[in-house]
Length: 488
Image (cartoon, rainbow, N blue to C red; front, side):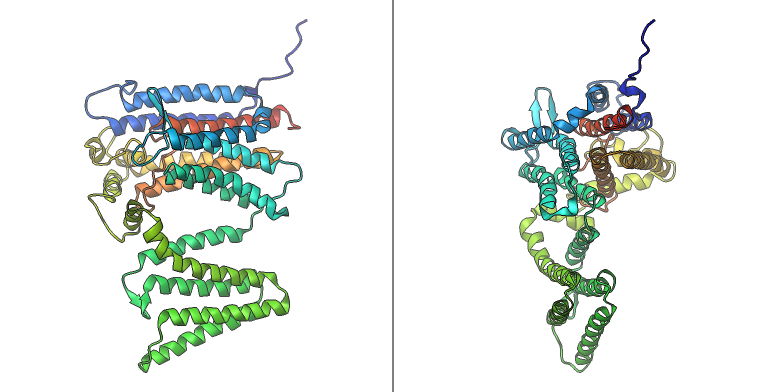
């Protein structure tokens, strides 16, 4: 009698729901690329001389890559995670020196008839290394500062190398991994600080023309925000209602005094008032901390001082660190300048295209803005405007819903993993997707500066498609091992 097979293949355990969503997204992406690049010559979607045909070829190769990734033993990904990570770092470093200059960036390796961007493959390698670190014996992120240093080193090494390629957009994607650190125990104060930094930068840059108390409105608004945060942290984070009340009364009282002095013609420079008021409040907190030994009060004080220092560094960073084209993109995104013929042209035409689509769209291949090539890069970074124009709000919403379903599916996969390796890797994949989706859509509708972030599975290009295929199918293989070997 033939022996019964008691060792089912990996395909018996793989999450087919995720694969179906993946197939729907890449198929919709190929159709969208065909619509974006269609120029009335009646070329077939499968014509390999067209962008759509080339993308279909990339999709076919991606499916082959995905199959291979599923067949590899899951222990390979864990045992060789650091080796894969180091190999990709070396590739990123070599790319800086051997890649040709492409629009000011040295991030593309030319391999015969095709070009690949190593930064896209750095994503899965970094995710594997981070997952390997967190799955190490007795590793707890909050156990020591050394553990934080290790995690941050894994994240920032590829960021530094990609910045060396002058590819800012791809480098920023890796910062989304801070959400993974938050899931694994990082204090929410760090995410709150990052959010405050963004708000301070935006407000300080945007509102610089008009004055209040002799200083730019943006600077005054940030000072008020810092004061509010200080009172809030004392009350909520430090649980010192009495200290919060005293600081609030100090800020309010000195503010009223400045107003009264101004009414009598005695002008108090705004910068002097805000700095002196915050300084006295910080000194009060330091004295209170020394008396009560409450370290959270010191954290609050240090946060306020750091915020003030960051505020005064914003102008220098914006004018001296950022390049002119980056400054213009930020100004256009913030509505400071229009520049409709240069930096703001893509975004303006994209918004026109999406707005003209209405509820149901103009119909497949009937978009005027995209067919007449008013939107540059409409088959790559601005592919979503084609969807908005031809499929309207309904089609755009359907695409976003598919992405949201995929992201929630990945989070569900993460939470059902028995170990840290699979959980951390899954959250890395979800973080990458959330960042790409939010920034790309934000670019297209004018909410974010244009930084060259593709829409996953939709934007034309083999590197992006392969990069996300690697991410997703390695995750599926890790998840399948959960049921294939319950002890994994």
